[in-house]
Image (cartoon, rainbow, N blue to C red; front, top):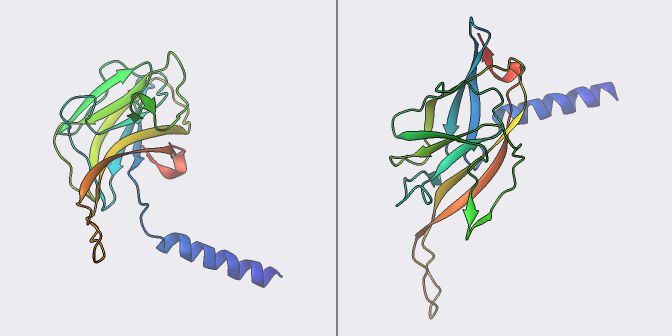
Length: 189
């Protein structure tokens, strides 16, 4: 019995290590710095899969973005963005919508800052973007949530004889995910 359990655990570990990338945008904490004044700076990265791009859109309402919810103790003016991105923080985080209705339902605590980064230049499929940071006065690590709006290219479909074909088009997609930030997942310095 113990040998069987050990073999199953080894197999599961091997599968976890060789598992392919997720098929959706991911926001991850890449590093956490404890500052001398007691504050903590989080470094984030955004990873796209091969079928997703990020586009600025015709207005702020249609631009692709990522929101990190409930960033307690945000130090005013501490958030940084990589080139091609614009930062904002609102009491109620920007959430992907369709015709005014939310497409996902994150936990968004009232009176708590949310971090939103909106793309201002196109980002290619499969890219990883680093350089997102924000500082908090809260030193305990918590698990949070993020949402994002991405653009996914839907390939053309060739119709069978006598049926119409469908042209390729871009569609907006929403996603929601957990933002793991315990110390074993981030490089705490």
